[in-house]
Image (tube, rainbow, N blue to C red):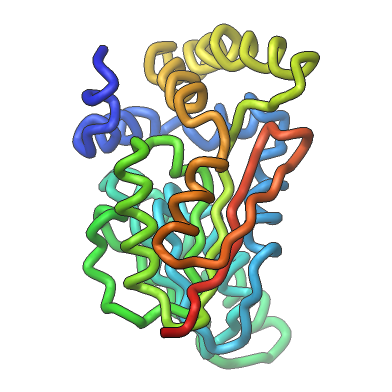
Length: 255
């Protein structure tokens, strides 16, 4: 399969539509639970304040939304987008279930007040339609690897458009560690074991084999860091668990 083909938006959308039923389970099992820790760190590494508007790009199943909502509070707002319609449907169900559970707890405690508004929208992260200068924070987990280098540059421009002056962003992505002692077993696990785990849960190892293809091509957030800096961000790259995940955190400079 050609490199151009794997980065076509329709190909990526269909891939995640097909994996949606088992993606959460396989992701957790194959990362030994580290995916949840890294998502938490993605949210924690960026400043958020009560009442702010946060855009969750490539939200997947909305895994980050509850943590973001807790940070911005009842006066805040979360705008979560994903290009996969199936992922969006699952995200809406997960968020509704989470909010209903919180509502029951509040009712038992005789507390009242509206929940933080969380909107799940099907949209392309590269042309989201979100109003310019409307977001205080942009955040995303495990979506960067599905973009080509040129698409990442377009994403940086889109994030800059969405953010307010001094707005902040945080990204995290599975990466290939530099250390040889870790890289060799890591790549073996990524290329050979994760597809088997996908086959056990899904019956189709090829879809989960693509996650390895994307990760090897992406490598880490280093190139993305340079691109975000080139379009005018203050940005730094961060490493997690010896480079098995890397992230970006930064700020839009005021005009």
